[in-house]
Image (cartoon, rainbow, N blue to C red):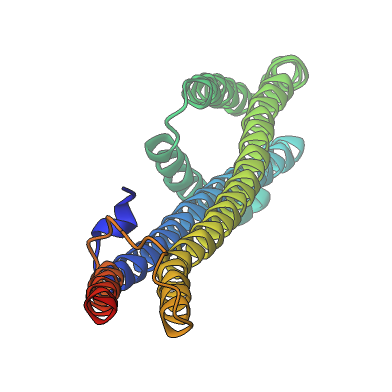
Length: 269
């Protein structure tokens, strides 16, 4: 005996509604989970974009200060030029320090940390050469200062900027990867959602068909028995193993047919 034959009609309907409701809850839960995953992926892209933007600002501020230092250097440390650029250099340096500290706190990848360490080293070398250059100017040794400028200060500044650019390139690669991962997450969630929705439709249709069939088949059997009895055919064997209301109906028809057979036998006697 199948499962549906053991259940009452009301229980089957309750079961059908429960399964459909469970599928609806599953689809809703998956949609919510997909939304959270997409949100997390989008937030990661935003974070990576902010880091790349901060790195770009860091590079811009650094190059700006380098150009100011070179301007002062080209002026042979002219007091007027130095007085003009000195507060600007100090303000930009303060901002550079803030951005560098923020990036050091946020960047967690091994490659990123290594680049930050290398940038710190290059910055230290640049500052040291810059100090040596201006000390040479103060002593009046212009020849030594020119040598330091061409062979020390400018190469140190270029190496410092190049290492910062390398970090920016790496950050942009991470942004591209984050965007790609976000798109893949969205596509994966959409595919899973459509798959589960399709499965829910198939299960709901099969369940509806099975419940309908479990009700209509015994009803058709009961109708056929009733017609045979109405036409005077009492030879049809009527039996069922169903435990639901339709089984009770068929058994009642079997009892009615048996009573009619007994009545006809008595009349014949």
